Length: 490
Image (cartoon, rainbow, N blue to C red; front, side, top):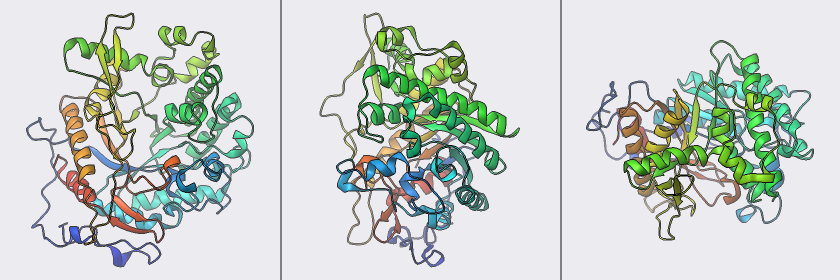
């Protein structure tokens, strides 16, 4: 494939969602794409291991739209986004990218870019509109057809079973404050995997427990918009990790011999503020303690002593049997990494302190998205060491940019390329040293509904005009295409 042909697909896509042929990608010819690298490389060669998986990630409520079609029930994000003042400009996911109707065109776009895998999530309320009870066959049909389309395009599907869109009926019964939700989640996962494991091998139970618990139930900035006290929030936390463990067991029971199960967690990506032996040791201690209530308890089957001491009377109530369920063995771990948390050695009982970022610290278009590429080296490296993880994926990494369509039709998101190149340089550093990261899922293929930020913040490498659903590849799409083709940094 050469640049003249790259993404020149407009004539093959439906008129309802035209793909803009990017002038940037068609004006100058490449003689030929360079051959894909076939060896691990060493820093100088800047290549990735043969078979490294390059993909993108999406979430059901952020892209699908069609919220009232084919029997889908309402989720907490439908309710939250339709509540005045909760999202930017009152934006909702009612239409989003209309992926429900346009997935064939978007999968063709994935193939043209060269993606080898696609991470997507299933809307629980499409499968069980009431959260439990009778499954909805039309909801299942959508995902079966969509996965078939991915496979026909040569793209491996990686499925996330919960990406924050809890059925509203279950929230009305207490949501994740109610232990029964963990059981309902496991039942949904078991049924869904039983129906899809003939097409999908890799399943993730939950996406970012840390976020949907703390931001949704603690800070109130995400659905369901609650501000619980510390004790109640800790119990929500416990029910979330318990739901993950129950789901792992249900997936094992309903999957097949090829089914592999993990999770995708946005751990606190601890890095040494300066790479000295003292600070590296501090970061190793910190990554365990700073993730005590999520990834640590999942991997170790216990809450750390320091966490329980810190929580005191507000600590979650749990049983030994629940801890055993929570730590049900997983086949892989997905890490969602955007920023870095910096640790420094300290003469205190913990052995470390976390360094607060000054107000001048550089960030992307989203104020929270501070730039810390070293996180893509240190977080997987330390996680592998602390928890003995043998297989990892970067299940999300990417950034927002102030994307503008220039007068010539291009979107010159050079800041996103800077971000991606910087982070992927650190990831290549890690895999060249043997850190067991097997693949990378860029967030995101398309601009989409960015939760409370609505449509203000754009994370895609493809620009979406939300009024017309027209797709226009950005400069970063060409960057990522070349990364994939070369299997090396560009």
